[in-house]
Length: 114
Length: 115
Image (tube, rainbow over all chains, first blue to last red; front, side):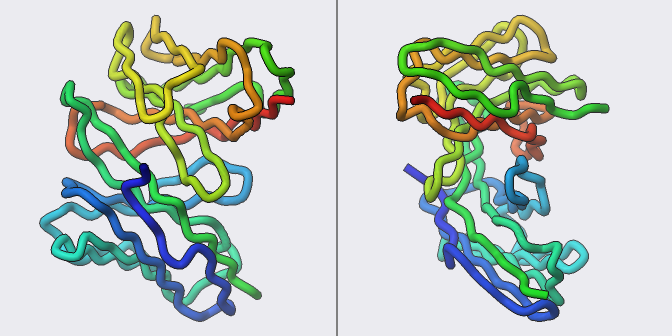
């Protein structure tokens, strides 16, 4: 079963507006990551936030994490047409052997209209 | 660096055929993994490897085999293709499989159709 669930599933905004995507997860985590996927391409890492952090910024990206609610949000400010993509949250955990497991959510499809 | 490469980009198989999806990375990463991506399902982990000679199952391993004879290569074998294996397959690598944080680097994907 999926660890992360993004909300909304799809989002359409005008260029220049802000876009907010949310991710909820089920079990405790060490880190939460956000990835972007352009149509037909592989995923690209955007930002990581650790479980002891509440907010993190990278350029036009702002990520928040609320471990009590098991949720995170990704805000893209002043959106551009080039931001059109699907966005996924990913949470980490470990298999019984101690090796890393990264579980992805179902994604939010963002369309930025020029 | 080429990063993570995957071949082929597209493949059509008939039910029952077997094939190997190739994945290679030139970043000397220990950890490599295979995911499949289906509409509305996100990415699901098929198999992963934490180093040459070490592999293990992910969430959806049935119908797939892997091996890791070198650090660079991590092929995924479909033993007897089924229509349920129609999907987009992504290979990913990261520096280490045992550290708490690892950014994953993804290949461009292989789009597989099984008729």
